[in-house]
Image (tube, rainbow, N blue to C red; front, side, top):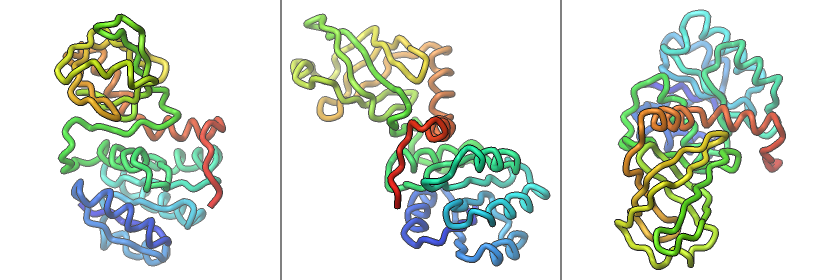
Amino acid sequence: MKALLLVEDDLKALEIEACIKPVGFEVIRYRNPIKALDNLDEVAPDAIIASALDFPRHWKIIADVVRAARDRHSCSIVLLRGPHFGSDEADKASYLGVNGIVSDRLAEPHCRDSLVRLLGRYAKLSDSRKSGRIQVAEWDRCILLFVHPVSNRVLCGRVSSISVTGLSFDPEDFGELRDLDRGRQVPGCSLRIGDSILTVDCEIVRMGAPIGLAFVELDPAAHALLEDWLAHGSERELAATAEGMLIIPEP
């Protein structure tokens, strides 16, 4: 698969390349949007990743040209948004058939996850991470609540990463869990993902910081809900930005 990368910043380009090469993309990078337009037919990319910060006008022209010939599944268009990308620009991106918008802060794990997950909706990736684990962002509202299997105390922790097979979390009081060992069953945990609460049985697979839990079994409805939630991280990020929940530092 080929990804056409339209990014001016060298470091940003290296970050993107390091993110998408392991999942099967050959990267062809342009700094000049006119040259990228001229070579679209020759390159015939499976995905286009463009910096809306570097090229606030040209990405619209490229999206319009691409969508005149190719649909969202034959060529994905992903925008990397900067600190001033607002809801008006998001509306234009939707109208022009852009597949998705992710933050350009790719040094952060959840931003890299968002990019790979978005590309994976429209292409078969060669990613070795079969469980699709993602890093949880501050706007994801992902919390674990459970009863200590020995003391019966109700404990709470922030989930730091999650997949359909398990999660890692940081308890509010790690000392409360020091008497638990790997392999201990923790039944009836309450897992909040956004506005939904799932009841899951877990097993401790790693003691440390963070603590690792595997789901013993997920019923089909919970599995489907969690899969859907995992797939829509970029939409949650964009909504958080539009609502002023996400504060992006000025460059």
